Amino acid sequence: MDEQDRFEVSFRNPIVRMWFYIVLPTGIISAVLFLVLPRETHDVIRIGGYIILCGFYIWTFIYKRKGRNKKGGK
Image (cartoon, rainbow, N blue to C red):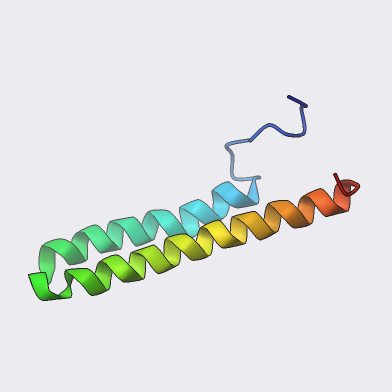
């Protein structure tokens, strides 16, 4: 494994930063809403969380792909 292919877990890494800005608060807010709101709304909360999570993974895929293209098209 090359040194450049390693995953760095720090706030200098944009993927980690976006995870802390988007996914972590979404999980916390969803957990609180599950506890506070009635059972009928749980599906809406779950679907919203899935949409945000899928958006994050799509952004991650595009970000990594764009970074690879800049490095030389590997």
